[in-house]
Structure formats: structure tokens, C-alpha cells
Image 1: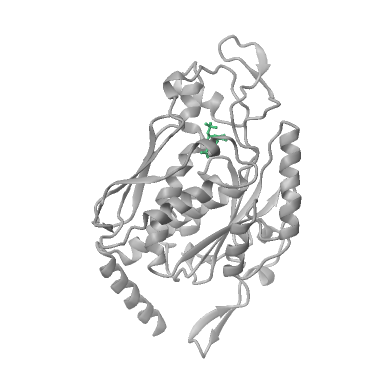
Image 2: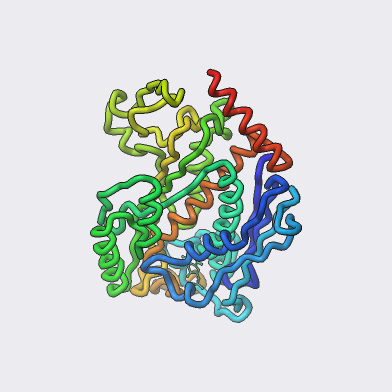
Length: 375
Ligand code: EPS
């Protein structure tokens, strides 16, 4: 059964919830790992004061017994310590860059508070928890993820390392950047933006290793895995661009530079490539190379020095609403993108290897690996 999930909950409501169907039975559920992922999402230089209030911890309400999955829907709940939705004041002055005005028009709402509560990036805690559940499943097949910041406010990370070293360096950096010098410059840039009552965006990269070839399919538009990954990452609040592999650079290079030449390594009996400009996907199908995707996160919409706006009730020119918010969320966006990418990869893995139980899924997976070795 293909994994599917729904999230629910408002930023200052009682809790955030996600229900996930399709996780095979017999999987050991490491709640500590899910909480570690939630903690990763809250970190990052430039994060707002909400992160000092919340201690995002997951409660598992269904789908497990004695620490293992049952194959039935898993329900994850994260309580909001800052639960005050009923007492929050109304808002009439939409923030440029958020869902405020478009949402008020769409829902016929005069109180923009009723829009921002669900539109808030707070919801991404549910997707990170769901992604963590999927990462636990994928770790059974040796599939791992990392994310790191590539650019903030125009400052680029120049260095790259092996997967393991990048994972380590990203976790140690306040801005999740593996390039130490760039990290410091990025922090200063974020501080400067904060001091100016402004906000800052940037780009990050997600890398996944250990993904088998053959996930996704060219046989139907909605089975192309690059399309599903791009959609999942684009659907993170604030993301304005997604690219896979060489991404936009393919537009300025020739085919002889872009396409990854193929070789056969007799010793390992494996097909090898001279590079990975495809970012691990060709024809909508994983090709056995690392998955590489990048995305651009826009500067946070709430500015302490607000932009011009209009009061939707009086129609008078005014300044935008100032809500508590972050200054820069590029570091945490990489963690969220890891999570939603893990969900898509887990969907593709359960679609290909099926399995009501983890044992059955693993048997199908091992059989497939033997099959491709015979090619
Ligand atoms: C966020 C929670 C929100 C915001 C922020 C991210 O909490 P609060 O509104 O109580 O401060 O801090 O949301 C946004 C910046 C946004 O534009 O939606 C979170 O948990 O990620």
C-alpha cells in the first residue's frame, strides 16, 4: 500500500496532528528519533522567540503496540505550549508575502487571524514528524538524508565534502552550512538583517544516499519521482523554487556537459557515472546515484519594519501587521525538506516493494536487488 498522510492543527491551537497510512507492520518505532528531528527543525541562527516556548515532542496515538507498528494508521500529535488561539486579537492589515490577503479573499474572512493560524509555518512540525517516521522506515534499507545551507543573503558556501562529513559539519553549524568561513559571514548577514528590522532568505540542498535505482516511473506523469519531490518541497511554506541535480544550470550548458556518462565497474558489477548532474533521477526514475535537490526559501514575510499594506476593513493605506516571527529560516527549511523528501521516497519504496509487513517489504527488496544484479 502506498503511504499517504494528512496533517491538521493551527499554530496557536491545542495541537498539531498527522495521520499516516501505509507504514508496514513490524517496524520498531523510535520516538526519540522523531523528537530529535523535531528539535533539529527548531534550531538555526535567526529562528524566532516561539522556539523558546515550544519543546516539540511527539505523542503516538495509534498504529503501534509494544513499540512496533501494526500496519494500521499511525497518528502523531505535537502539543502547542503556546495554545491561545481563542484569545488572540483580530488582524486587519495583511503582510505582503504571506497568505493573509489571498486567504482573506478566498475564505471571505475579515479577520486575518483566521487565515494565518493554519497558514503559519508552524504546520511544518507535523511534516517533519511524518518525515521522521518515514526516515525510520527508509533506514531499514540503508537510505540516509542530510541537508545543508548553500547560500544566505547572497553569501555562498564554496566547500563540499563526503556525505558523512557534510552531515556532521551541517549539524555543528549555527546556520547548517558545511563551509566554516561562509557560516560566519551568513550569521553576520542574518544579524544585520535583524538589526535593520528586515528578514533574509537563501538556498539549501538536500542529499539522500542509498536510494536503489527504479523508484518512480515515466509511465504516468504523476509517477515521475522528480515531479513528486519538487511538489513536496515547493509545498513547504516560503519555498519559491526547487531544482534537482544541476537544476537551472542545465539551461546554460551543453548536453555533453550535463548528461552523466555511463561506465560498468567489473569489480563491483555496478553501473557507474562520471558525475551526477541528474541528481539521481533520470526519466522520473531513481538511477542509483545520490538524490540531490536544492530549493530557495524566501525571506520571512513578517518584517519588524513593516511594508506598506491596506486595512482590508477600512481600505485605508497602512503598514502591514507585525507578528512575532523568525528573521531567517533557511537552515530549518533544509530539515523540513529532508522530511518531505523522505515521505516521497518512502511512498515510492512502498509502491515498488509493497509489503503489509516490513519482513515482506525487505524480502521483495532483496529479491529486486538480486534481479538487477543479473542484468
Ligand atoms: C513557526 C511558528 C510561528 C512563527 C513562525 C514559525 O510561531 P508564532 O507565530 O507563534 O511566532 O514563529 O512562523 C512564521 C514565521 C510564518 O511566517 O508562518 C514554526 O514553528 O516554525
